[in-house]
Amino acid sequence: MVEKAHYTFGDSDLAAARLRLLASVFEPGSARLLARPADLGGELALDLGCGPGYTTALVAQHVPARSVIGLDQSRRLLEQATRERSDPRLSFIQCDVSSTPFPVPPANFLYSRFLLTHLREPSQVVRGWANACAPQGRLVLEETASMSGEHPAFSRYYSLVERMQAHYGQRTYIGRELEALCASPDWLVESAEIAHSALPAKDMARLHWLNLRTWSSDPFARDNFEQLAELGETLESIATGEVTVAPVSLGMGQLVLRRR
Ligand SMILES: C[S@@+](CC[C@H](N)C(=O)[O-])C[C@H]1O[C@@H](n2cnc3c(N)ncnc32)[C@H](O)[C@@H]1O
Image (cartoon, rainbow, N blue to C red):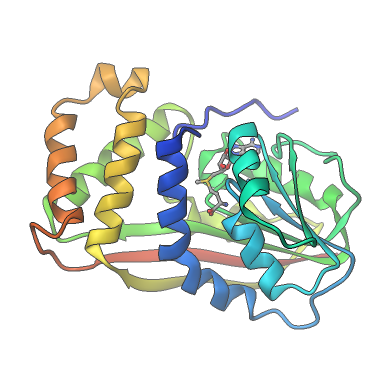
């Protein structure tokens, strides 16, 4: 049994608003990845840690499975996902995806973005996901490998997030370790790369500013970090365009595995 992780970024209305913006900023890179593997299909595709369902809809767009199910532990985010999506192929189920079995049959396609970074024992979790995947099915993973911005507010924000996640046994830049942590006799690596992109500083600052408002009340952050309000104000000034700065450089770890 994998120890239950502490999900630091919340599921409040603010967190949901951040996930909406996150979905639009990261959609082009994820769409390119999902469009790549050939011969996809089958009965069932799963989106693990689906949040409000933006990635589930993206999977449905690219993977011709009969049914696409989003799994997440947050009832609130799943209610939003169900409310906002009318595609009859999509459905959502509340469950902790850090251990199998899931309450669904083995799937032909599994996708997960920005989830492993929040788990304490990601390697063990990915090994367990082999039980939820049909033979020859695919597992596609996307996680942050690097992030850097010219303005000092970005480096300060990234170092604080990294420290807070480390406190909870989580890895901010787990995207750079994906291939190593997924090594298992059950999974064959089809492709492993770091996709680099330059993302608008305004959007990234807004994402971070919204997130800071969520995690600044976390007990570890409250006890260990100072001047978070000032950092929030600086991020806000970049987000609103009051201060203009160069794009943020992102490296996204993208891994495609096939079930043996
Ligand atoms: C950063 S969000 C990513 C949402 C979506 N994958 C995306 O990229 O837009 C992480 C999601 O993982 C969910 N989550 C975290 N730990 C989980 C667990 N153990 N089981 C199920 N869901 C989990 C959270 O509730 C949240 O919705």
